[in-house]
Amino acid sequence: MNIVGSRWWKFDFHNHTPASMDYGKGELELKSISPEEWLSTYIERGVECVAVTDHNSGEWVDKLKAAAATLRERGKIIHIFPGVEITANGNVHVLGIFDPEKDTQFITGVVGAVHYRATKGDSDGVAEESAEKVVEEIVKSGGVAIPAHIDMPAGLGGVPSSATIAQVCNKSSAVEVVFPDGRLERDNSALQRYRNLNLTLPEVLGSDAHKPSAVGRSFTWVKMSEPSIVGLRLALLDGSS
Image (tube, rainbow, N blue to C red):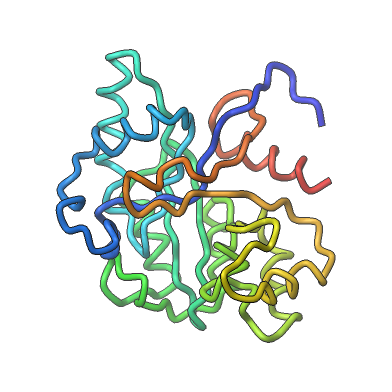
């Protein structure tokens, strides 16, 4: 697919803010980071598009959009994609990424639609709906659904049933892989189980950053004419062919 006027954008698909309870990974002082400081780290490391995917929460979306507008006035450009990392029933994490025009209230609505009733920002809180239903709700809401870190314990690849993995992936736009070459400290059976299904979904990388030092450690080049959910969806569709 050749999209006229398109270019490559440095895109980080998986990122956390202080809205996630585990942000800082024990370094409590990091929780006081401001939205502008948070975004500035991404800008300094060349990230152009950042998906805000806190655990079961969209609390920081509006704060970051306001900070991005302020930074833009200073000539520092970064594009915010509102999103969320939903913990589905069975402890499977699913990323939902939405159009830059969406806001905190919209993300809160998506989280509520999958019947998540636990504490916002808590990765251990679990929605009542299955991973397949979570994916369906994200897509229904106009977003891009991506099973998170499919090669890790809290990823879809850890699900024993290959049929379930296939059902979820067939409704998703991509999968996120943390170690695409299988370099895991543990065995890579989860990744292998997924790849044995021979599905055609593109594999994207995200930093899954929970503190500034992890920002930009993993990213994906995405070809779009401009940062939008339509452009992202087309790029992922092209990447699967």
